Length: 390
Image (cartoon, rainbow, N blue to C red; front, side):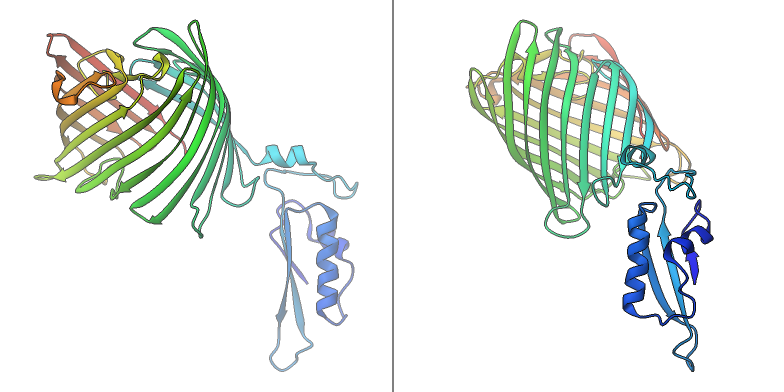
């Protein structure tokens, strides 16, 4: 008999749980009884016993390979005293603690901690608890699980609280609620998603309850999402939005195209359209301005029921894709407008911003700085930062 997979429990202790089997016939019943003893001991996350023939000439010369998977993160427990890690200890042993640090235009710096636990609800599952302060204050519990086969690729859900200040109305937007989503990927470049969420909203003096349910289609031919080339990324969706004062159908389209020019230079173009058939409450208004859709203007420069925006950006990498970091410069022009329900897009006047910037993408850190000038002659700096651990 041999033991594999144990890093803390001595071989002798494991064999002691099974009992002395040397010299006995290796029947299926004997092997099943030995595995049951290991399972019932409660000392291992998973166990298995493999039967191997050691000789072609002698079928009675058999090796039993005992394979154990000890609980992750458990350094030591007293086997001789029968101490078994409890469910809380097992749960925390699978945890990871990662910092959250990012800066979003219009909302400032957000910082905090994300605690994640993997494979506690089946393989390829994760439960995360992000807690942040600063630009976005949140305390949420998020659960997700992905699947390698079948029609469903990923399911996810969350419950919790988040608050940040609306940069247009300069009013705190606090939401407490829950959400769920299901995604399917019939092809690598094609995804379908559906889901909904329900929130209790406090927006200044407004107390409301809003719910969304809808679906979306994603077309994504990008190979390198960090710096795509000769690719398309488009998201098309529709939501049914219900709030205390009524309900609305909201349609969204965000299409991006990337065309390779000379050398590593890429021309990136984007078009965004968000329309609704009913006037939305203030806290659901679309925001125009800032790095999100119209550089050269403050984030939340305008707000409205409908939004249309477009941009063209020339990206010029200055380092090789094989380097540790990717550094480059860019030049761009943005257009955008917001308008009310019932108005026609063709009647709107578009604001425009022109400028340039630089970006740096490292393994876990991304930095960007854009400088743009608006039609009114104002110059704005748009800084973005993100720290990501996977």
